[in-house]
Image (cartoon, rainbow, N blue to C red; front, side, top):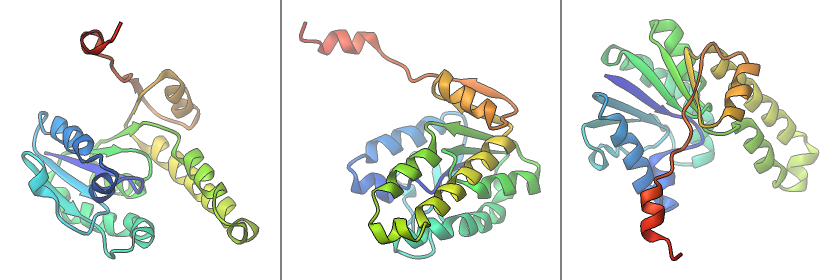
Length: 198
């Protein structure tokens, strides 16, 4: 059994609200081909019924999204440890998930991390759009520093980092990744040709 852990940057509820529910269902169900999945997210509601052969463990403590994301490393740590006897591998989607490293170290289970984008840089860009008072109080700089520290911590402690492109692979190596595998996004040229207007 595999623990599939989504970071602070993603949840089933957010995918539903953004009209991307098919994306997460497909992604999670693809993992279930490997074996049984225990899915951990910062959701409050259990969405197990949306997936095939997947047990969803919602780790959200409060309904407010901002607070849920802040508390997720703590609640996620609790739930991952509570259910750690069910899984052999921890598979993390994204790097916004420090609790996975701690559970991996405590339980001696391998940690595999998908590195889809530079999360800390995305946090910086998002925070730059905040109001002036937020920026004057240097909260954006502080939160960017925290995001960088989390990203480095996860990449450095992962047994394997799976990067979507060579650039992210080199970034992961600079951040101390032990082993990097590059699996680029694929393109199905038959579909492109089939739906092409040319």
